[in-house]
Image (cartoon, rainbow, N blue to C red; front, side, top):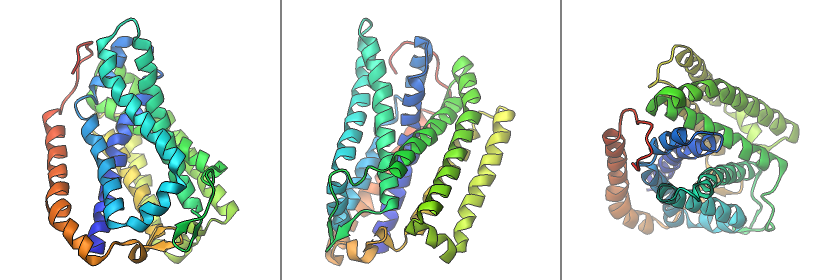
Length: 328
């Protein structure tokens, strides 16, 4: 049961990062667009599916709360402020989806809300990941740090890096879904965003070595971890070729592969800890009876149904979108 719920948590988190990641990335790119027709096309590229994508964040939180309550009880007080800002950003951009189509004179407010909410949500997610990699202070199974223990140069750097990564995901989704100038602009942005993401990864690696972060020792203990960066590098090479040859359907899955390899590297570097390097999976798990009870409801029905409706929604709304001012 413990391994089952670890797998559910990992899959839910990865699906959220990939699916809502391109939503947030398009929101960041939206802020740089100067033409309302382009903005309409960018919003229509995600409007039918964005709210379904965000349910995976709910699934991640619920799994953490039900299956690994000890981790939930530590992480929530550790990241109260970043979590509140992230949720505020997600709420603001969700409201902007609807209100932007119902106004003309005040549309600039909702344009700024959509772009700003996306940027804040993406930045806070990266910041929390960076703070988690650096280490969360835990004493006697409880969070022992201050209100701003998460604030560090490394965490801020990771926040910027995830914004770059999400924007790359968003650009690759626009290539897949849009035509004309929106697609061409996304093609032009991909090389710069990929180069920025590569520079970020190099800086993070050097910083981690300089600061002797505990996670770096795992690379020496587990050399098979280098398989993931190798797969990511091959994906980056294939991405460059697909952009050069203008294969619209190829960049997004390749960028998703790069994200998946980064996620796999991080997850296996932490194993068997859920909070590195303080709380193990076994220590964090709920009692076996609770895990089994959850399995017969959420595990057997809810999560499979979420996978099914996600697949159906992407199937129904496949193909290119048009540049139109009409609501989706």
